[in-house]
Length: 165
View 1 (cartoon, helix red, strand yellow):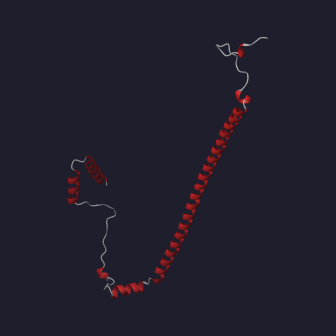
View 2: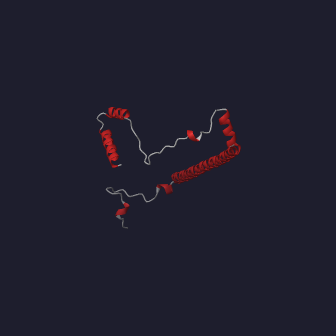
């Protein structure tokens, strides 16, 4: 009978145990099985909780979207009602506005008169738009800017554009 080296524990003359303690002992076997079952149950419970949390967050977002859509549709209805009321008011204003009534009220109550031909004066306005700045305002700007380099540069640009025009 030959004994192989695999049957001995390294550095010892003691032989290795040839049986599994968990298989031989029923109490240890039950403990190992229950440990495996507990881990499996915890994994299943964690997965169910995770799926529930994801589903709840998706449902919550959909609820928010539905709420915003309801508010938006209510505002659109309110907007249409305001537009209709505004259109009705404009129509009523146009119907009730009589230029003859306005003219008589202006002449009688306010003392206004239509100007005669001799009271009308026509003036000719130059064809180009320009802005005149008074010297007093320019002096105020110069005093407030002091040694401001940007203000000085802007003044030079204004003077240059004045020469081009």
